[in-house]
Length: 306
Length: 307
View 1 (cartoon, one colour):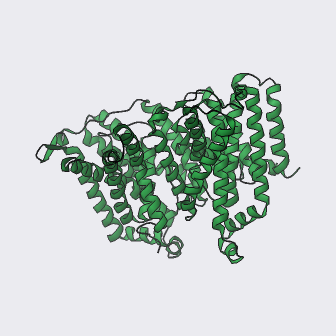
View 2 (spheres, rainbow over the protein chains, first blue to last red):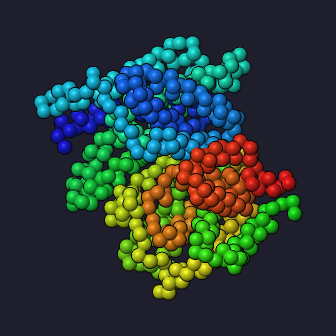
View 3 (tube, rainbow over the protein chains, first blue to last red):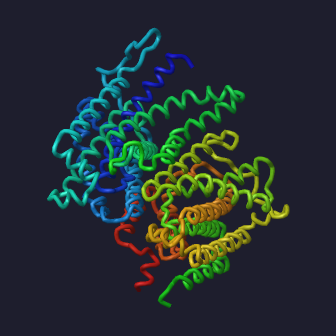
């Protein structure tokens, strides 16, 4: 593996990492503030991608599609909160896991009914098509760089909202000690709805941005959801900062591992078994990292609750 | 008759034993019942963890997968003898449970759910990259497991009673374990870990042993599932399957292993019925699951008790 390839893999990893962060941020806040496990957060990413792709096809413009998909994803999240999640806050984690699992089954099938089982395509916008020459002989797609930039900008915005605004202060307080925040006269349910809607919108945003480079299909949120859970567990539940660090870590480990592992294994074994073992190890790598981190820091890297 | 803990499973077992002679002897219904019993066995083993030890595992499908892939590995090596295959499947799952459990048991609550999920995903990705055994596409078994070279398990009726026998044995084992001192320590640690520790019980070895026993039973279910379908695929280890297993346990009710038994049978039958009745059956199944969580708090068994 040469430097160019490593650079491309690194950029791809970071770009995957910021997408993961957008999904994990909502998840970790909801988890942190309300102690609520939402397995259905991944399908919100999927719904965002479908909304973006279909609205872009309808209006004929990527930008209009993106602009309309965001409020639509927000409304969709709030509707889900009203219909299902609201009734689960007082229940144990097991019930939350199961009910939100039911939401996944329904929505994965639902998009199949509405949009068909075949993957949907969303064109890359004119403005961001083409590539940027990063170094000699390396043309990196502009759109992927745009995803990276948009993700980092959203992360900065989120940092500002959480660390520097009153609502953000309440969210942090809620993640640290929810009963105390309620006792001080804050309507934590309303706060949670806010966090929830915002989280759904972020996941939807990630979905729309990923739509042009991935295929939009039923179940596309499931694998991402599992990785997002790995992210928030590594980062420390309820911590946005932890989610950011862990998302980039997981994105890099996942992407570079996939590129590097088969080559690394070739040092020890013949080509075909190296490819096989390398692929297996690469898929396992993030889980090994997670198990290792949990074994030494059971509360994650940046635990919100001290 | 107020406590269905004993009469309900006995009724179910009697019904299952009589089923082949009550006009359900056709191939498909027997296959379906075998599937129900196999998942019943897996759900009963998961019940030991969830109901007994309070350990919500979202990676139990991996245990079944270990058993199923043990069958595949041996089949590929030309070994189909039951006295090799069954112990291998059970041991493989127990070993996997021991290794992953040793780490997972250190965490609790949400972290335990997540780490079991992570280990399950590890197993899933490992199996889907095993190109020798079909990778993503799965592996079709050369034949069912043989007993002393005889192809008894090919006979649906014999297979039906083998599944039933093993199901009864595992149910009885879990029932006995939960009532024993071992089970009481598990429950005490679930209710109040601090007090259990103050009484001189460290919950960790008890929980680990429960995790390994449940894993071993899951492996047994996996061996049976591989034999029933004569086909094994990584989908057996998908995290959705672990979710299904959890739902079976909760659907039946956490009052005892009889709940998991009833829940698994109900799940498999409703799934079968719905998937035949309509193409997009998950549109109904998903909301059904949500409604069960909302309203069926004690599970099916809880309904019986009230009524």
